[in-house]
Image (cartoon, rainbow, N blue to C red; front, side, top):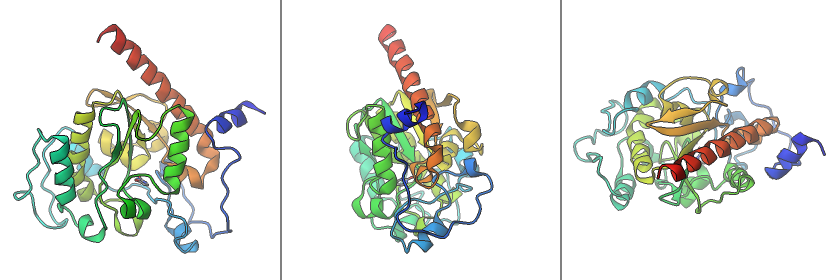
Length: 284
Ligand code: URA
């Protein structure tokens, strides 16, 4: 067994996943590293929606994300859904129960009318690890929990590989809490309206490390438009919290050859966490 195979086995990713039926390939992805979950719409069509893999490619969100990076106030974005900026003010001091209720009752953007339920996030509310995805897909929308579809099962395996488990040392959340129709990327205004909820979740959790899954999550949290390839392998900072970027699991399902790189990212994250914990024990 070579080293690569050993790593993949540890990540529960070997033998590599293969599609169960031949499918039409999506239109060429010119900059494959730029995608988050991957451009799965054509794949989904070809599979008749059998596979509930999230689709993304992230062009959305950036301009608005940049403007909200340092703000806990809901930016007033026009032309997206009803204007509820007065009727549902966001309070920076929101507690967990208040925040959950605000998300449940939110209709700041048009996404809420098209989804079944909001997907708040799941896990340990004082977790050291926070994993952030893009937004709910069909299965998440049905169950109200992030990453419960095929991509979620891969995420669970990735967590297991670094000795973590959903609901234990980890909190899992998304940038947007409502499923975008047809699994499209969230629009800039939708991200802008929803980001303050994630910002407050992060304030409440106070994780020691954030792992951004895919380009949408990374760009939204970092307030930039950088490619995923350029963001990987570097330690970033979200308001003083270390942040590591890796591929979205749905993208890995489509591009299994990239799983070894995801494993490198996870090892990097583990290393960052070890250092953060060591620092914490020296300076409690
Ligand atoms: N993809 C995401 O980004 N989030 C989910 O919750 C599920 C799939």
